[in-house]
Length: 359
Image 1 (cartoon, rainbow, N blue to C red):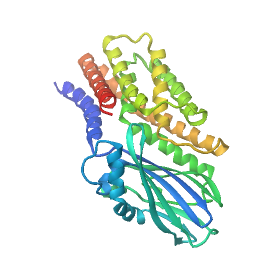
Image 2 (cartoon, one colour):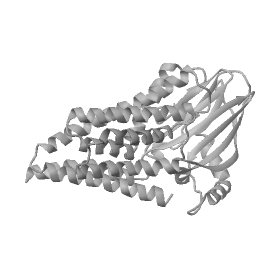
Image 3 (cartoon, rainbow, N blue to C red):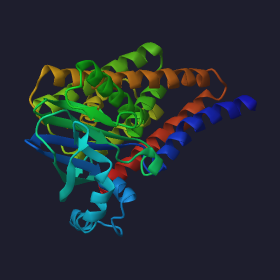
Image 4 (cartoon, rainbow, N blue to C red):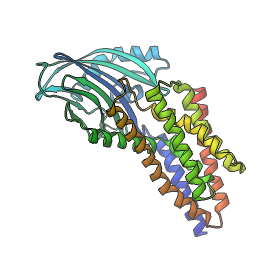
C-alpha cells in the first residue's frame, strides 16, 4: 500500500503540479522590442502581451475583440505612459532622455493579443554612450511569473540583439559580445521549453511511450532534427504558418502521441514524431522575431537558442525518465503509466479545443 501511494504521489506531483502552473496567472510572458536611433531621437517599438499589461495597468472592463482592445489602449494611454516612464529608459552618458508614448495599437502573436506601443525618446545629444534600461513586469508586481523581452537595436555605436529578463535589466550599446549574447539566447531556449507546458507534455508523452532508453533516444533525436529544421526555416528562410494553425495542432500532437501510447500503436513513432516535431519547431520560432539580415551574430544567436532548447529537453529527460523507470518496476506499473498517459491526453485535447474553437 505504501508503494502504491508513493507511485501515484509521484505521478500526481508531475502532472497536478504542471496543471496548477498552467492555471496560475501567467507562467511566462514574452515581449519584443525594436529600438532605433535617428540622431538625437530614439524610437522604441515595444510589444507586450495585452492581458499581462492589463494586469499591470487598468485597461478597463473585459474585451472580446481587437477593436475594443485598441480603444482600451487609447483610453489608458496616459496610465500606460506613466507605468513605462521609469521602466523603459534610454540614456546618453548617464543622462535620461525625455520619453513620450506616441502610438498604441493591437497585434496578434501565437494566438495572443499584443499591445504595440510606440515610444519616442528625445535625447540631449546624438553622440555618446547610449544605454537602455528595461524593467517591465517585475516579478515583485505579481503580474507575471517570468518575463523576457527580445530586443533588436540599431544605434550609431552598434546594432544587434539582446535579451532582457529578471536578471538582465540594463544594456549598454556597444558592450554586447557574441559570447554574452550566446549565453542570453541559450538561457532563453532553456526557459522556453521548460516553461512551455505543451512542449513539456509532448516530451513526457514520448517518454511514457518509450520501451527502452535506446528507443527514447531515437524519438528524441528525430524530434530534435525536425524542430530544428522548421525553427531555422522560419527565422531565416521566410517560412510562415499562422499561429492560429500551429498552436491547435501542437496541442493535438500531445493528445495523438498519448492516445497512441494507450492503444499500443507505436510502430510508426519515428515518422509521427518527425511530423509533429516540425510543428513544434514553428512554435519555438514564434518566441523569436528576426527582422534584420543574416549575419554571423544572428546565426550564433539562433544556434545558442536551439542549444538552449536541447539543454532544457535533456534536463527534462533526466528528471522524468528515471521516475518512469522506477514506476515500471512496481506492481502498479501498468495502471500508473496508463493513468499518467491519460492525463497527458486530456491536457492535449483540452488545449486543442480551447485553441481551435475559442481563439
